Structures are given as C-alpha cells and as structure tokens.
Length: 265
Length: 185
Image 1 (cartoon, chains in turn orange, blue):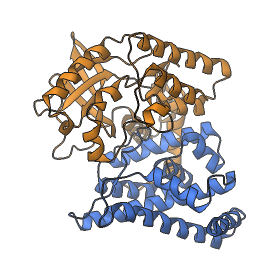
Image 2 (cartoon, one colour; image 1 turned 180 degrees about the horizontal axis):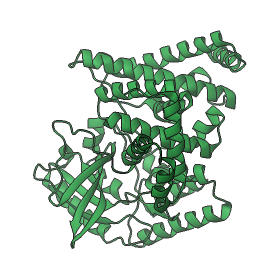
Image 3 (tube, one colour; image 1 turned 120 degrees about the horizontal axis):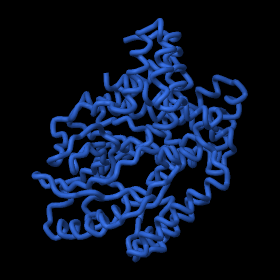
Image 4 (tube, chains in turn orange, green; image 1 turned 45 degrees about the vertical axis):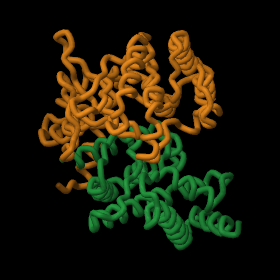
C-alpha cells in the first residue's frame, strides 16, 4: 500500500477542505472534486470513515464484552481506571451513542465497595445540567466488571479548542462562566468533581462546554489503594490538583474551585 | 551545571545550522532517556507503567534546566520526541523477542491522540506507519512525534515547529486520521 507523495498531497488537500465545510456540503464538494477521479473519492472517503466510525481495533483475546443492550463501536481511550468505548444503546426505541466506561474489575471484588459504587452512582445519575455530561446507566457485567454509561460528547478538549479557535476574551469568559455555573449546580448537591482539568472539559460543536467524569474520581477513590499499586498511576492530575488533594486531606467543594482557578489562568 | 551549559551550547549551534551539534544533542538525549527507562524497567525495578511525557520533561530539566530559553526548549523537544520514540520501539522489540521479559507499556495514549495503541506490537505498527508518513510528509510526522512521544499540546507543538496553531491543528487532524486509517487497514 504505497502511496506517491503527489497522490498523498492531493488526498490531504481535499480532506482538509472537506473538514472545513459544513457536513451537509461535503457530498457536493466531493462530487465536484472527484468527478473525473472516482479513486480519489474512495480514498478521501476512507479517511473520513476512519475518523468517524473507525472499526474498533481488533479486540485482544480477552477483549471486553459489552453489557446487554450495548454495542461497542470503538475504543475512545484507556487510562488508570479502565477503558472508555464509544457504544450504542437501545433506549425507549431510540439508538443513542454513549461513552461506556469499563472499569478494572480486580478493584471491585469486595461487596462493600460494590454497594458504595451503587449509591454513588445514584447521586451522580441525579445530576441533570446542560453543561454536565449525564450519567445514564451503570452496572456490573457477569464477570464482575463495573461499567458506567455516560453521555457521549463529540467535542474538543478545552485547551485544544482554545488553541484552534483563539476565542476572544468575551467568548472565553462565557465558556468559563458556563463551567462555573455547572460546578455551582453540582456543589449545591454536594457533588465534587475532584479531577477538573482541560481534558475533562469538552467543547461541543455549538461551542458549549460539557464537564465529563463528574465525581468519577470519588467513585474510584475507595479502591485507589488497589488501583495505584496495580498500575502505579495516580487518580488525580498534579498540575490542577488542590493542595489538600496532594496532601491526602479532606476534600470539599473548594477543591474544584481551586482547579477551576488553575485552569482559568 | 557543566552538562547543562554543554547541551545548551549544542542546541544553539544546531539552531544555527550545525548538523554535527544536532547529532550530539540527539545522541545525548537518547542516552539519557534510555538510561531513565532502563532504570524504571530493568532488573530489580518494580516494573509498571512508563510515562514518556514525564520522562521527557524530567530529561529537559536535567539536561538544559527548567528555565531554558524558548529556542532551546523547542529544539530539545524535537530531539527528545524522536529519542523517546526510539527508546519505546527498542523496548517493544525486546519485549517481542522475550515475551517473559519485563514489558514496557507506554502510558495509555493521551485521549487526544484517539488512536488506540494497545500493546507493543501495535507500537511497532505505529512506528512503521509513522516512518511511511515521514517520507510523504515530514512535518506531519514531526507533529505526531511531538504530540505523542513528548506529550506537547497543539500550542506547544506549533511553537516548537514555528507554525501557526490553527495550521498545526489542521495538520494534526489529518495526520491522526491518516495514521488511524493505516493502523486499521
């Protein structure tokens, strides 16, 4: 599958033009640009497909099984807590895209922890705010792997969005205000995010922020001993963590306010 | 301190076009990163997760100091990203050669990359695809190296390569998808 440099540049140029036009105009642009070159069309289409619906990487032998009613589409990421998959679920007759978190199962063997996990989950599921990604569902697979189904946000990390769009002061403040209001709504219910950072804030295609993984750090905190020794990873991000988190002291709503402050800088 | 002065001087000479100085920098940075990785993964080490981004930043502070000027940092990251890639690929090859060996697992890919690299065989596939990209589009390959192996943000990547952030972002978008397509194929 070797590609000549000229062909590569031709495909790339068209792909970048397509990225910049509205999704509804893509077909027309593709038709016009590839009228005399159907091969070009299929190559560009392959790139577009790779971005939007790339098949999941061939699952390893002990690959994850999806909870009943969910269809795994592709791996979105992998971290200390487990894996996050883009998945589809049937809900009231609708197909809905969700971010499905499959947590490391070894940390969850104890019944007491599982009970705690369930009660925290209920609280998080009650967080209903336009700028907070919803927790839809959660449970445990037959093999004991806990999972969480969260609202899937097709967006861009806050810092990448800032780098790309170079928003003026006014739009930037509007976004920060939305984040602050979402935090306030959660804090009024005494839910603390605990791991606020640009990677956990996505800007959707309308320019609105969504906070991800609200309270997930707390869900996992119970098991942090086991998770840390198993992977050597920390469940917080030092750059944005408040002093009391680094010292292992009690966490309050002020912890989020501190991280928000670091980010706003 | 003496070493920091040496390396900073080489970086400046490299920036001014001295290729030999560039090779000295790359050799020194590679040796440093390999040593640090070996310390983490070698016999007697606890094993576990190798965090390329953390290693690169530690090497930066050790080799040129935390307050190095902008040009030095930019050149350093270029050399370090390349060296980190080499260290990981060497380790993945060694791991394939000896399955019982103390495996190297790079830190889970930054979600930003959105290309799943589950194990060492896939790291080798990524290295292959990246080498192909290098022939077609050297700048795109640099961007991927800086993002993945040195953990730079889009902004930092653009600054290191002297690009506008929006153009670095577009290049990154395309390179990411191109690699993903190659890796899925």
